[in-house]
Image (cartoon, rainbow, N blue to C red; front, side, top):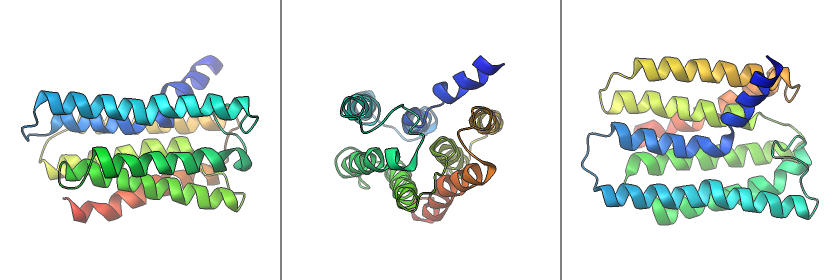
Length: 201
């Protein structure tokens, strides 16, 4: 059980959540989007939101700025969160502009707001759960998409609820966060997505 709970934190790492949201969008959107465009977007996002952060992480680790991929202290979080904000800004300016795919544009604007909020809290020595920020933000985006496209994705939403609970349990099990930090993570993930829904729903 110990290995399973630790694996959950790794499998549903925050780095993977934005791309998961984008893949889900393309799989459910009724709009016609050329396959070439989808492929180009996914490859670009994979490089920017997963490959680049991993490379930056190893650079920061080599420089002694971080100790692990889980960024266990608030001081370790500051530089990676700043870099993450820069990456997300590049995404919304170059890859997912509002004139192309407005839903994904505001999804990433929400991610940017969540990241900036987490960064501000880190300066004040508060460690909100980045895992919960990521999974709850994607969960809220899925709910909004189901309303926006009038599609029944109850099974997916139920699965996301289970995943959210599993991630929270995992983070508690490894003593990475307190209940307060997990709840703050949920709020930071959900509220920006919720507030931005009227701009694209």
